[in-house]
Every structure is written in C-alpha cells, then in structure tokens.
Image (cartoon, rainbow, N blue to C red; front, side, top):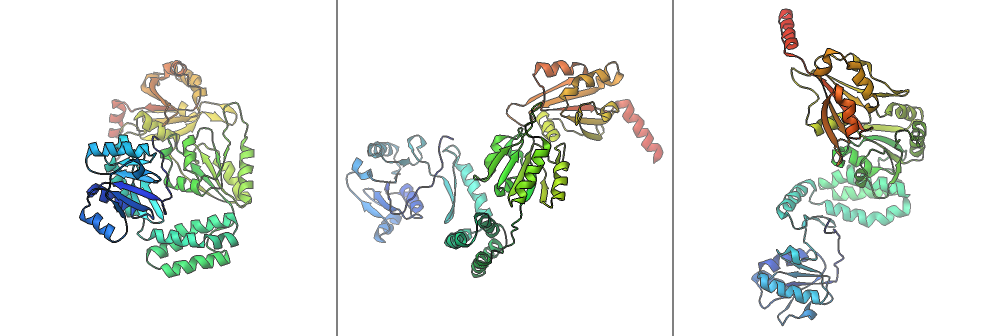
Length: 465
C-alpha cells in the first residue's frame, strides 16, 4: 500500500476548505457529516455555501490567505477549481504543516478522500490510491445494496449496551452475544423495522445470558484451497473470523491468516517431509482439548479437508469425545493444478473417467494400482507422488501406451512460484530434476481415447440400441 487507511477523530477539530464554488461545496457536504469546525477561505461563495454560513453551520473568512490560515487544522481541502491557485495555496498550507487534500491533483495530496458508505457509526471507506475512482464508486454502489439503511442504528444500540454486556458476561460470551446480534434474530428484526423489539431482545439476552449461542467449543475443518488466498470459500472466511484458535498447515498461504480475527491464536502444525514435529496424533488431541475448553477451533488445511487430508482420524476423535464439528469444503489441489495448467480434468469423448489418488501411503511411497490399470479415456491425478516418479516411468517403459499418456506437472499450484510443464513418461524424472521439484506437486496423467477405440465404442453402443 502506498496509502494507509485510517479514521481520524474530527469532533471539535478545525477543517479548512479553500474555495467558494462547487468543488468546495462537495467537500463541505462531506465534512458536515462529521462534528468538525468547518472554516471556508474564499473571496466569494456560491448559494449553497452562503446558505450554510447564514445557518451558522460553517465559518466564512474573506481575507488574505497566509500560512497562518492553515495552522492548527486537522485537515485542509484546497478546491478553488483553478490548478494554479490550488498549487499556490498548497504551498502555503504545507508551510503551516497541514495535512492537505488538493482536489483532482493526487500528486499534491497527503490524504486522499475515499468513496464512503455511510451507516453512521458504521462507515466503510473505499480507496484506490487515486488510480480508479470509478471503480471505487462501483464498489460503493454494491456495498450500499448489501448493507441495510438502518444498520448504523443497530451498531449504535450495541455500542450503548456494551457496558452492560461487559458487566454481566465473560469475554467469550460477549463475542457470542455480538455475533448473534449482528448475524441472527436481532439484525433480522431490526432490518424489518422492529427496532423496539430488537432492543428488548438484546437486553434480555444480556440479562439471561441466553441468546442461541452454544458455550461448548467446536471444530471446523476448513479447506484453504490450493494456494492463493482468494480461493478460500466465503464460509471458510467466516469460520476464520469466528475462530478463537487456528491450527494451520505449512502449505497454507500465510496471507489467508490475515482474513482471521486479529486476536485469534495461530498455531503452525504443518508437517514437512522427513520432519514430523507435530505428529497426527498430537494434532488430533490438541484439537479435541481446545474444543473441550470451549474454544471455537479452525483446523485449516491446504486444498479440501476431505481429500487426502487425514480428516477421518480427526473426525473419529471428535465423535469419540462428543465434540461438535463441521467440514467446510475447499478447492482441492487437483482442481487448482488443472486451472493453473489450463487443462480440464475431463474432456467430452476423450476423458470420461477421473481418478484422484495418492502416491504416498502410511508405509511410504508406492505406485497406486489404478495407475497400473489405466486405460484409454482415463485421467489420473496423483497427489504426493513425486517420490514415485521413477517407479511410474519404469512401469510403463517398453509398454505401447507409454507414448499415449501425457503427464502434466504442477508444483505450488495457484501461488506466485508455481511451476507448470507437460512431458511424457520417459522424460518425467529428468524434467522434475530440471525444475528442482521434490514435493508439493500434482502429477496428472491423461490417456485420451484413440480414434479407433472411439469408433469401436460407437459401434458397440449402436448394437446395444
């Protein structure tokens, strides 16, 4: 980021707007949403600004402008409409040490005005660092449709009741309370206009401590996707934002953790090849113990937690310990690799069978039986199979189908350092060595149907019909 987003305290602070026309009026309208003291410097005012002066809502100074005019200000807007005058006033304001925004001249701006979605006290600011204001307005329009008009009133009500909640509820219970308020019955009631009922609902919940949220802990097995953070699902993001503690694998993109609640504990439990500092049994018991303490736990796994992620062992432990759990699916690594290679895993009339298998068993690397029994029309995706590359190549050596099977290798799929290439079985081991690929790769084997085989199938189908 070249700019840092921050909300400034404006109540009672001085804001100077230099200019008396439409540009100045636009900035004045914006500042009137705050409780700042607004001073306008201009030798004349348009009708809108003049009316605001008459109402006593802003102060007008028609005098010689000097650096002293900009002293002790929280913010200065320069909006005369004349680039040369704006530049001169910018120099005076900077001499006074002011923070300045010059309309339509981003190179002269210390602060850039964002597009704002106003649900006071809920305020969403959208900025593009001055590069794409039209895009910022489009995002603003979308958010205006998502956030109900009176959402700020609900937030203000919650603010007034925070003290009462703090006095009666423990920190975990308070988080559950506010999660319930903004995601469940209170928000729904408030959105349909039942404001009084909403307030009573929240007050009762604070008094009784009962608001539909369980005090028991739980575990969510969340798929982080194959690499890039924007491939995690919306539900996965929601679980990260609800979590008290997150146990994540070494292959998970660290940027995904930025989507979590800031005060959530983060624990790396990833197992590197040959260095199992966190054995699976320890991970499983740690998850159970955390949930038993009443924590909301996220087990963040690369790809999809239901595909080659050892989730069954964890699920068995949860069921035995009576721990509530859920599975949040993710984009599996084979799909991520397919997208990186721009190679669909199935093709009409060419690939009609898809097999996902692993080249690594509990006893070590081994070439799966389904690979040895491949036939035309099959696509086999091999997880954790770089270690069987030599065995794979050796098995097909001398077999006529060797030249019909195309191998696509994708390492570190959907990440900045991904490697993608295609080869044949004979050159596979050499190509892996050339690219220094030792693990974290998906091998995809495709054996397309030959024209003769397809013709034979069509003849068979016709005979059956």
